Amino acid sequence: AAEEVASMGLWELFLKGGWLMWPLLILGGVTVFIFVERYMAIRKASGLDMNFMNRIRDYISDGKIRAAVDLCRKTNTPIARMIEKGIERIGRPMGDIQTAIENVANLEVSKLENGLPFLATIAGGAPMLGFLGTVLGMVKAFMQMSQAGGVVDMSALSGGMYVAMITTIAGLIVGVPAYFGYNYLVARIEKLVFQMEANSIAFMDILNQPAEKK
Image (cartoon, rainbow, N blue to C red; front, side):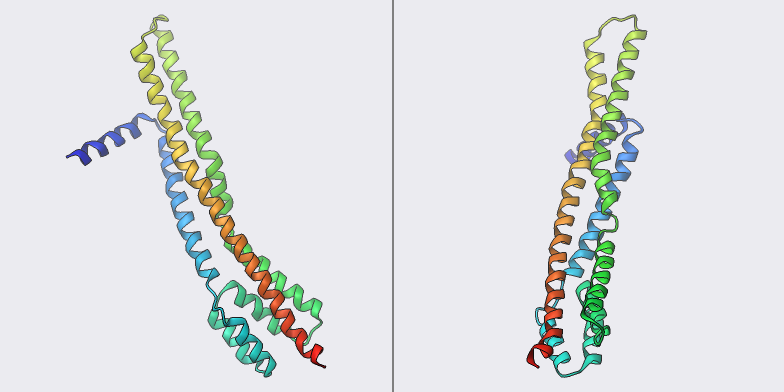
C-alpha cells in the first residue's frame, strides 16, 4: 500500500510539472538507452586476448599471412581489424602501412563515439529545459496573482512555486546522470584508443624485426 501511495505521488508530481515533463521523460529514456548501448559496445570492443599479438608475431615470422588474417577476423575487435588492415598491406612501404592502420583506427573510434554527442547535448540541454519549465510556471503564478487584483496569497504563491520547481528537478535528474555517463564513456574510449596505439606500435615493431635481424 505504501508503494502504491508513493508511486501515485510521483505520478501526480509528474503531471503537475506540465507538458515539459514529457520531453524530459523521453530524454531520460534516450539517455538510458544510449548509455547502455554504448557501454556494451565499448566493453565488447575492449575485449582482446592478451596472447593475440604474440600469435600474430608467430604467424608473421613463419610467413603464415593467411592464418594471421583469419585470426584477426575471428577476434572481431577494433584492434584486430586495425591489425588486419596492416597485415593486408605487408610488402608496401612502412609509411603506407602506418597510414592504413591509422585510417582504420579513426573509423573504429568514430563508430564507438556514435551517440555520445547527443548524450552530451542531453546533459547540457535537460537542465535548461527544466529551468524553462520553472520560469514558465513562475510567470503563470504571477499572472494569476495579477488577475486576482495583486492580492498576495502566500499559500497560492508557494504552491505555484513548488509546482514550477518540479521541472527543474526533473531536468537535473535527467541531466546529471547524462553528464556523468558521457564522461565515463569518453574515458573508456580514451583507454581503448591507448590500447589501439600500443598494439599499432607493437605491430610495426613486428614488421621491423626481420629487417633488424638482417
